[in-house]
Image (cartoon, rainbow over all chains, first blue to last red; front, side, top):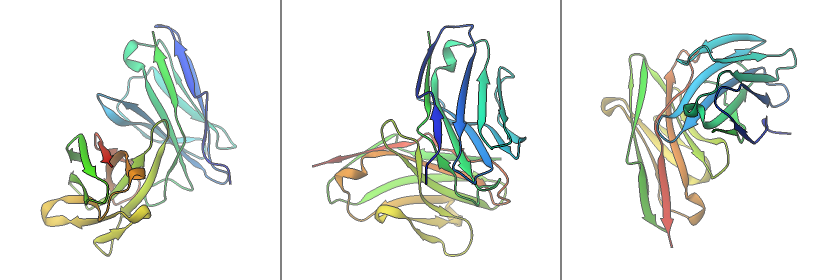
Length: 114
Length: 114
């Protein structure tokens, strides 16, 4: 069974640009969560989607947004990129909302903002 | 609100020695507790989790952790370190309603010396 697929694996963008990252969950999983990982702040929760609805949202500015499609695939968008947005963005999928169901993580998209 | 403190950003052990990675949590409600491992350029993999019931939890790759409510701790141990255990380890907490996102510690990098 295929795992969580994140594309692209690496991205280099310029300050002020916008970027879209994609996450395809494990087949049958309906919940997708996004995390930002940086050396200074560690892993921070961005948002969680279930059945195309945002169920939880972390403490990030409005420049960070996401959505989920009917096939459970999810995208996150960051507009007006800042240098501090450079990070590894991780997507996790699970059968349902809630941490009592195991979350499976993708390999991440490493975003570098120059 | 929940938070996690991992004591020691870097731990180094000899091959065959005991591994002990420390995690203390803060939670205003009964917690769910997790340990994840991250290998270089990879996503996170669940090692083990505590939800309810037995306080000593066994996970994959010979790891185990004990939930101690009185000490608000969930330390990760392995009796004998193997070279392949070298990785970054993250402790995480969520409220045991199951519907809140994971809050991660800053991580502990484990090095295993031959």
